[in-house]
Amino acid sequence: LFDRAVAGAYPPGSTFKPFVALAGMEAGTIIGKDTLFPGPPGLSIDGRYFKNWSSDSFGPMDVCYALVTSCNTWFYQAALNTGAGPIANVSARFGLGIAPLLPLPSVAQGNIPKPETYGDPRSLANFAIGQGQVLTSPVQMALAMAALANGEFVPQPRLIRETVDPNIGTTILRNPPRQASRLGLRSEDINLVRDGMWGVVNYSGGTAGRAAMRNPVVYGKTGTSQWSVGGQLRSLAWFTGWVDAENPRIAFVAM
Image (cartoon, rainbow, N blue to C red; front, side, top):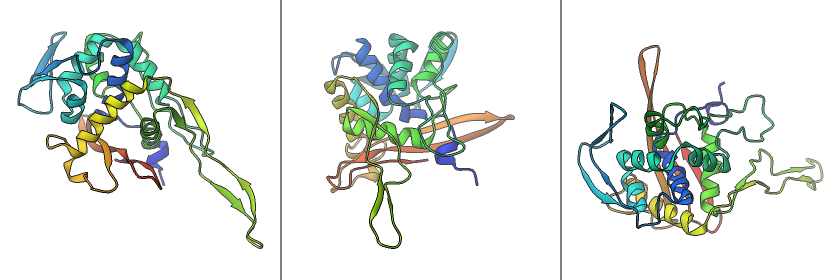
């Protein structure tokens, strides 16, 4: 009876990378497609070796292709240059680390670490790829994907769209769509992240090519995350995004 979608909080893994990219662009440490970082198999950060998911060495990449390939080492460098403050700030604008307003007894807040305690190089490497202390619920990620899709606001979740009199069929109460918060981000930055997420599904080097459809077009981001409980390794997989259909336009999370 545990509602994982609403009450569960899990490391989002690489599905968190779009928010790291946006934080870097807003902070000016990633200048559109002009900023290029290499993608080696691993990086030594503060005396610890942090690996990419691939043992291959990727050449210099811009932010879009880094999202397409989900290159960990590219995002380690992005986070180290950007710092924890901008990443935490952008995450909060997308509603991460904040319990969604749902009339349910248990709604997960998740966790976005405080910059003052999570700004050392090793912590930033984990921050970059949605691991360590970063926790989100599936419904939070779905709302964040909806915000990326519309580019302007995080929607407020609804359980009930309208209440109808069962006897005569007339509407008693409507619950129209509402905005939970505005993003306040540059449209050109959001468009670059969207381009990368289009490529994740529709480009030959993308990590989610099997999700591609001709109609509607799918934008997505894959992610895996690992953690330890009592010495036992736990892991899970994510796929987040939206379908660019006129009606209905759907944001989704599969975990």
